[in-house]
Image (cartoon, rainbow, N blue to C red):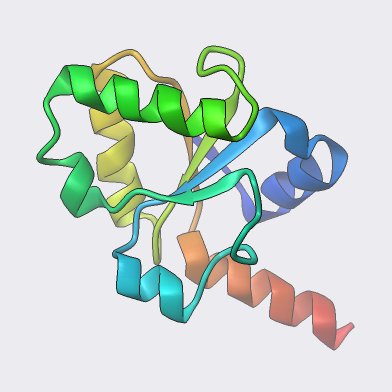
Length: 124
């Protein structure tokens, strides 16, 4: 399974956000309380793992096709980055996606690592 570091994700988003779809698999309340990216970011969506786990395989693929299309991308061409709080749930989501032929990257350390990197950057 592929992973992406927070540093590499930030570089990718700064350089070419038009090819990335960040899918946050935390629960709706977690994302509402502490979003990874600002709400309304066109390439940032929330699809909780609890929902993903109960979808039939065909619907998982359809849902990801719909999410990438809404972001102005095509599923086979987009870099899909999965995130959760610390990397566990997004790892499980990555296995589900892999099972239906969707290539994804798991954000190493998830939201916690993302926030730590932001704090370290702000402290400089």
